[in-house]
Image: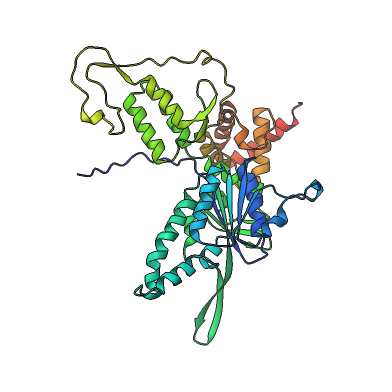
Length: 426
C-alpha cells in the first residue's frame, strides 16, 4: 500500500526564471545581457542566438574597451528543434554557466524546425490524424524542453517576440494588447515576465513582491540584485544537507537517506567548501566521507541482523551480522583553524526585506538608501546585501526590528538615526 506523507514546507534557494517579451527592437537582448551580468556575479554567461547573430552587436570590441560591451559565450542556432535546445541546456550545465540566455525562445515554437513544424510533419503522416494527431508527437517533445529549461542549474533568461492580438466583434476589429509568440500560457512557467517597449520594461507577472507592477527604464544590475535578494530568502538545499551531515548524532542510515535525497535533486556534483578544512569539493564526496565515518562495524558480539526497515536496497550496504557501533569521526588536524567570518544566512536574507519594509524602505527604488543605511549601521561600505557576514546581518536586523516596532514613527525615526550616523566623524 502506498503511503503519502506531508513534509514541512520550505522555500529553497532557487534560480531565476525570467522572460522578456516585446517586438523587434524593443531592447530584449540588451536587457537580457544586463540582467545576466547582475545575476551571474562574475560567473560565466552563455547566449543561444537564434536571431542571426544579433547579440554579437553587444559583445566587446578587441582593443576598444572604450566602446563597452558585455562578455558572454555565443552559440548561434540556425535550426530550432526543441530537442536541440535540450542539448544546449546540457552543454550549459557541463560548462557550469551561471546564466543561460535563450534569444529567442519564440523560434523553438514557430521557427524553422520548431515545434509547430514538428507537429505539422507528424500529423501529415498516413493515419496520423492531421494536426490534432501530430500533437501526440509534439507534446512530449515540448514537455522535455520545458523540463530541461526549468531544471537548468543556473539562472535562465528567455526572450519572446510579441505580435498584436485582436478581437473581432461583428465588423469591428479591436486591438486588445500583445501576445507572445509561444504556446498559450508559456509565461506561467516563469517567475518574472517583463513587457519591453523601447528599453522600458513593465513587469506583467512576478513571484517577487517588490517587482509587482513596476515600470523600469533599462532594467539591469539593480533589478538583478533585487531578484537575488528574493531568491536568497529560501533555504540553500546544499547547505541544508551539509548541516545535517555535521549535526551531532548522524547515523549511517541517515547519511544514505541524504545521499538519495541529493541524487534525486541532482546535487551530488554541487561545489562546496569542506565544513572543517575549507577545501573545495563536491557534495557527493562529503556525504560519502561523513557516512563512512559513522558506518557500523562488527564488534564480534553476536546479535540479530538489522531489520528491513534499516536496509537501503542500494548496493552492498547491508550491515553484517553482529552488534554494531558507529566508527568515531576523527576531525582533520586543522579542523580548529579559523575559516573566516560566516556569511549572511538564508533566513536572515528572508527577514531583511520585510524589516526594511517596516521602516518604509521596501520599494525597489529605495535600494541605494538601504545599502547606505546598512553600511552606516555595520560600520563598513558594502555594495550588496550578499556581502554581509552573519554577525553584521544580525546587527542590521536587530536595528531594523527595533525601529520597525515603532508604528507610525518607524520611518522617520529610522531616517533620523541614519542621518545621525552619517554626521558622525569617521
